[in-house]
Length: 526
Image (cartoon, rainbow, N blue to C red):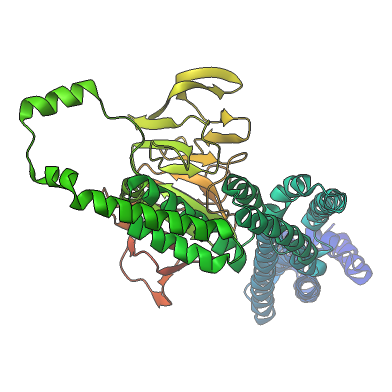
């Protein structure tokens, strides 16, 4: 029988049937025979040669199997050691190639989310044979269709004279595709037209129309010198109006003089300056007359109480005080987080947040570009739960309410065009996120508000407060406990302003440029 198996092994080896030959040669009595030992050595050499071919072709499992068979027959030979080295190098090369492909897909995903469609096409070109590339190409085509459809509708509306509809069509598209050249050109044309309308309204003295037009223009989210100047002018007009209400003629004149230099054709501004000057002179005459002497006389306490009861104080808080209070509120527990390739976020580190229109007397923490009829609401946090309260009923999930406990996914509407969504991305964190889908902040680049409770998760997946799929695992931006400090905990290597951070956690100062692996961000307090 052994002679028969020796002959069978010879034929199998000659025919290249190495698996069949190995099954025959592995028996102990086979290799105890002299001819069997010779055949086992020849078979081991053939297995090594085939294993090397498998490794060069990238078939690592097959190469490893041949290496194990050769070792079983011939032991730890030099040829077997060489094959193991080839397999190790091929395995390392394959892993490196897979890592590079994964990085390229991750970069393509980031660029898709950022609206950089042309860059995505370039990144996917070398990956056309990858299974995931086809799905991403389909998503890319769908996004291009959305972009082209939005541009076509906006262009048609603008050409027909309906620039407001054009702004509505471009509002969301501009935020999704901020780097598209054709889209930017169309948006600039529309912005230029609206800016001309704003300047005309100011020159005609229709400041209410100018403010409404600017609010519509903010929906485009374009940054331009003229747009920024108009935004500052809007604040200057508000200050001038409040100075007039307060009877502060010198400061009102100063503000109006600055505005007159910006709009020399607006004759009403010069007229207002003359009226304010006459008013200031009249007030000066009154203060220097007999009534002004009453300022040095102390009214009896009883008279003060009687007057206070008969004529209680009414009216809004002077705007100058509002500005001071808003500035103080903004500097306390509030900052902006700018993550490159992801977006900008307003972060509020307080247990109670007031959300309302920018013109509200309530001094909102989150000031929205909305009409004065929009009611302010308060979202407060206690023991990890969030409660919404409002003096007037608002819509929560299309049902009117003046107060209720919020859970993830609640849709809140303060008005028809002032809507946002409340989210709790991570059950392990008390931090919540407000998605401003139908509401806007004065800063057009901020579309999300983070209500900070100890930490912000920046990482992949829907469980992160700031979604960043480029990271393998989430990093944590942690509040320092009311002292304004921010600490970063990350598994990635962290650099601050180009220098490697040594200590962990890393303390992040406002204005510092932070890189953690593939992600970079900046924190500013404004």
